[in-house]
Amino acid sequence: MVELDNLDIKILTHLQSNSRKSFQEIAKNCLTSVPTVKSRVDRLLELGIIRKFTIDMDNSKLGIAEAILLINAKPLAISRIAEELLRLEEVKELYVTSDSDAAIVSRVAGDMQRLLSIQDRINLADVNNIRIIAIKNASRKEATIPLASTSITLNCAYCDRKVTGDAVRKKFDDRDYFFCCNTCLGEFEKKYIKLLAKA
Ligand SMILES: [Zn+2]
Image (cartoon, rainbow, N blue to C red; front, top):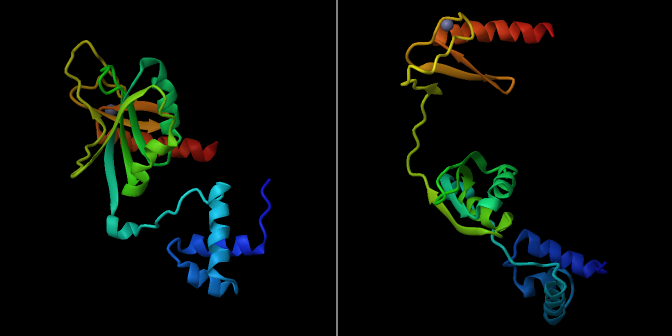
């Protein structure tokens, strides 16, 4: 344990609120001299208590960004990296692909500072390459599954008729249900909510 005195704490508080605050200003506020502040800051840096002087960016000016994160890694490390990524708040979707060139494809959202810091927050061992590509425009579609193959048959979870054309997919309780149309989905939803209310 490192012992910090009142002066150390005061200096840290000043730097936390604004890491560009001058030593003069801090010294004046703490009723001490500039060399004292400087030597304390040097000591705090040496002790690793101050790891780095960071900047606080104005996110509203930067905007919220969406990006695609591509990670190429050794096959053995893929599931470990995927697990680590899924724990991050910025990771919204993640796919492990069968293409060894881009083993993990993920949609991430957040301000640019946070997106860029993702690589500092995962263990990069066995990672060959990591890329973040900003998304310019995103278009999202309804979660329909095009069924081209006649070998796949799906029955509507509500009316039980065979689904022809595109199925409507919806998750209830972590399970995927398929419907022939939005009306059936709506009816099922009503029934499901009633069931939940009874339970
Ligand atoms: Zn139906």
